[in-house]
Amino acid sequence: MSQIGRKIINIPDDVNVSNNNNNVIVKGKLGELNHQFDKNMIIDISDKEISVSRPSDLKKFKELHGLTRTLISNMIIGVSTGYTRELSLVGTGFTADASKGNFLLLNVGYSHPVYVQNPDGITVETPKPTEITVKGIDKQLVGQYSARVRQVRKPEPYKGKGIRYKDEHIRKKAGKTVGGAA
Picture 1 (cartoon, rainbow, N blue to C red):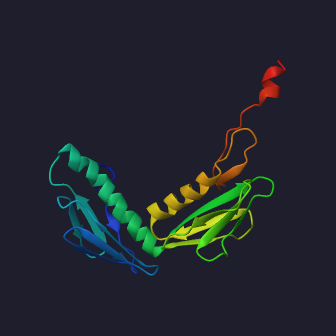
Picture 2: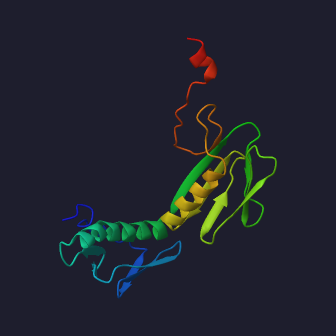
């Protein structure tokens, strides 16, 4: 049995969960999420608990068991507390500005500014010119948008310049001068 899949999901008081032919709809104070799960998975919603089980021990159902439970749990956390991803810009003159409407303006060392479109359901803030905060209720969407912003200028291993996650550590390489001196 899946160790993750057999865990019970507790539903907070301010969250409402409904299941209609494995189309799970989760409503909370921050918004509403819905997802269509595999029709064979058994999703049981009782008073304040959700349990996920599988119909048999086929490999396909074993794979879906933990995934289904985790996706439902992420939906509940998203509508009750939300998800946040923080990025920082490292480099001389690197700035970000989210006050330009539905775009994030990045000046990251190119000859031109880079505009990144903000998708629906995502809130982007720049508390400082070198910090970006991405907030939303969909964990996958927050992570995907953060990765897209980071892709504009990935951190390079020699000086560490670029857009990185707040908690990310960049392993720096020694340059040619260090290697040639020996």
